[in-house]
Image 1 (tube, rainbow, N blue to C red):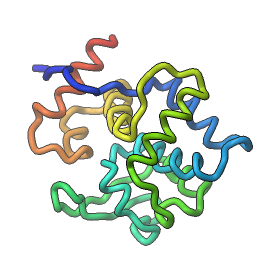
Image 2: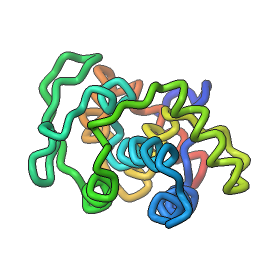
Image 3: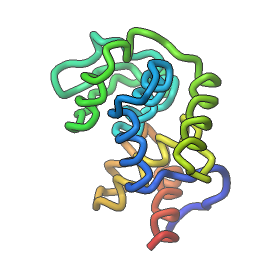
Image 4: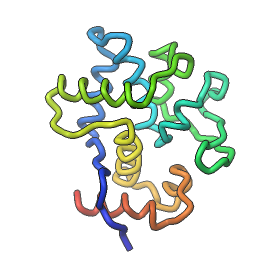
Length: 168
């Protein structure tokens, strides 16, 4: 059974995500926006929480994987990185070296979204919702998503199944 869709669980669509990626790779992006967008897009590709992204270091990246201990669950995690996540890391050498406060990232994301004429409220947490919904739309299994997101209860993950069902 699908969970409730209450709260701010608004993901980016695939097209909106691609728009952010194009801006990230453009020559017009300033360094502050690029760093913030790098963290945001990395989370869109992995589903990691802002606390876990903030704790990552370059040494956590092992070829096409990241290895880390989740701040919330305290569990060791090994996540396979897709091609786009690897490209995001390569494009920004300060990623996982230079830190940006969550509040600062949220202000930057709001500004970038407005500049791109996007009416949706975008915060860093939007990236996690984007990952989850795009994963399910692509045919991913809810049980696997539960593990990737680090949820303890399937009911928590089922919220995303409900959101995907509403969009269908």
